[in-house]
Image 1 (cartoon, rainbow, N blue to C red):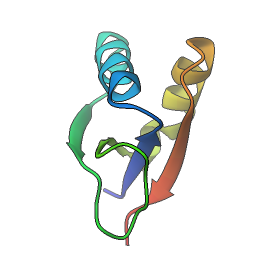
Image 2: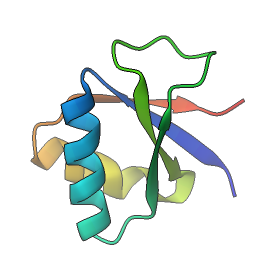
Image 3: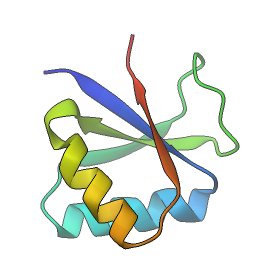
Image 4: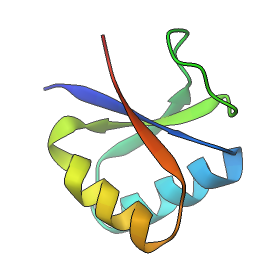
Length: 72
């Protein structure tokens, strides 16, 4: 199963996003930002690519700035 990385502007955003996504039934995990990604925050979320639309909807509804990155 393909994974996506979701990056955020702050650690607070990652923690809030993980809490909300988990509550909504999305399988996600906070991870260190991989070296190939540049980010203002050192933590990211790893999600299944199949959950991208649901995560986009959840994060947008909660006004959490984010960006999706494909795993190599």
